[in-house]
Amino acid sequence: MVSRLVSANRAGKLPPVAEIAVAAMALIVIGGITLASRLPHPAPLPVLVALLAAAAVLVLLDVVLLARLRDFAWPLFFQVAKWTLLAYAVMYGILEFTFVYDHVTGSTLAVLTLMLVVFAVDIPVLFGFSVARYATPGPAKADSQAS
Amino acid sequence: MADLLVTAPSRPKIQIVPVRGLPIVAVVLAGLVATIASNKLWPLEFYHVVGGGMWTALDLFLGLVIGPILAKMPVAARAEFSARFMPKMLIIMPTLVTMTLASGWQLARLVGNLEIGYPKHWWLTASFIVVGVMAVIAIGVLEPANIAVLFEMRKPEPDGEVIAKLMRRFVYTAGITGVMQIATLVIMTRLASW
Image (cartoon, chains in turn orange, blue):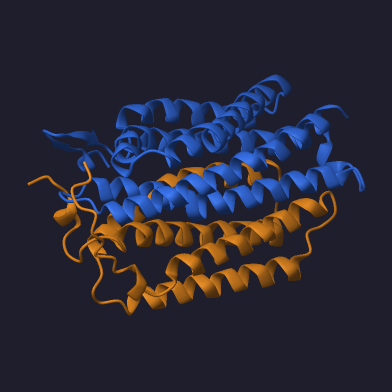
């Protein structure tokens, strides 16, 4: 099955997109824990907004770093990112439904929703990059054995 | 992702997402939404206990039993195993995690666990932290490695070094989440004893 044990590892030349994406994810998770740990008291909004903003900046940085890449398997990246977004949108939908169902309103709901939006960009970027970094730049199916 | 199905005479079919499993996932998630909307004790407990029990057992088994066995297998054997095993995990784990967390949150609201003050509330906070760390490890490291291995194996000439590296990452992170599930067991049985 593994026909070759020689690596053409291009990963070393790529920017730390995955590491930044994981850091952004960690900030969102810390925000969620902070919010949940304070219940039933009101959420500490300045802390949550700061964590959200920091995560958003990291995701934006990831997008900028990715946009500067030329020699990259973009079709494969978008193929994976697209399906990841679809899968996670279902999960985010259930979470958002739970928030609304539980009468979470106002600024808390806005922050939670924005956290999910940041996640919705972050995770597909992470998954797409994690796969495309090992692929040969070119069409999505170039690396498959369909031919 | 059905178009990702690839066949070859000498290698197993590698389907990134097992399409036949998706209707089951849809039924489970629809049941989850109905359960949350009903806000009744038994369905919420059912979803939380069944989902959480399966999630914990799978993590423990994968991290502490399958993982060490995989780590000692040759790369080619690991790849063969992964080609059949990982696609299934790709739909099983997110489904279990979603049903456990969403129903657990609603259950905690229903029985009033979230209203409990500190120091008892620390048990809840500890559970949030454990789940948060596991989520970062699973979504940030384990799952991308899982998907990348599958895509690597679909290539006409898979890179053994890349597969070995990603599988190592998968095995280590599965071990960490397995150990963390022991903390989950302690916390959850404690909460259930209140």
